[in-house]
Amino acid sequence: MLNSFDNYIFDLDGTLVNSSKEVLSCFKKAFIAAGYPVDESRFTSDVIGPPLRQIIALLAPELKDENIISSIIKNFRAIYDYDENDISVLYDGIYDFILDLKKGGKKLFIATFKPKIPTMRLIEKFFPDIFDDIYTIDKFGKQITKEDMIKDIISKYTLDKSKTVMIGDAASDVIAGKNAGVTAVGVLWGYGLDKTQLIQNADFSVSEVEKLKCLKLNYQII
Image 1 (cartoon, rainbow, N blue to C red):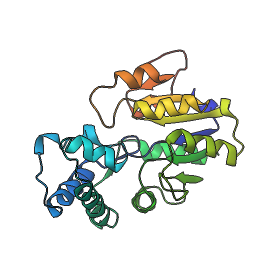
Image 2: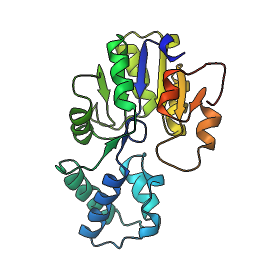
Image 3: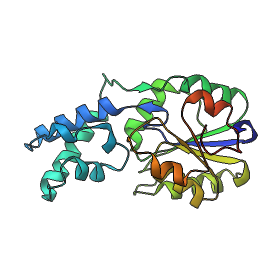
Image 4: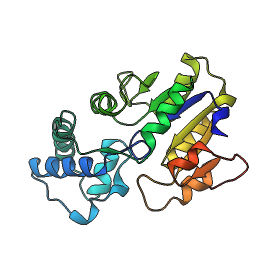
């Protein structure tokens, strides 16, 4: 069961926090501010999760002008990073699950592709004083992969890999976890409709938060 693990590394967006409406709203504003047309059909939660440039490529695959791309990124950060009316929400049951782990003496970490400023805004709003450390894509002043984050967490805190689990909603989360030598659990909520790659690459997959609490390790999907 998950209780057999001592260390938990979580993705943030799509795993703990549903920020899809907030992120998409801010991207629309960023595109408009840059004078670039918005194709409403592409603004779906499927695009959320990767770094900003990859999201922009999904929202506007025909856009190649680096000046416009840079302008959209700058606009998005200015709008999103300090949004006092953030409409992001926690997934049902997540807060109680995280709090139970904390009370049980587990070590808890975040590994996210979000930059530090918006990440800490969400952490302070939803999970104050809960996580032992938070790794963002810009934690070391340059972009790092999720695998790098996990490996650095393991090294810094001298974690036993056999007692460590990575939990995320994207195939890239579980692949990073497995490459770093820890158990990888995929959650079937979050972003993206096609979870095939997530299921294929995860050690175990769960469909709802309640099932995280009683994960049976002899089943692939529960």
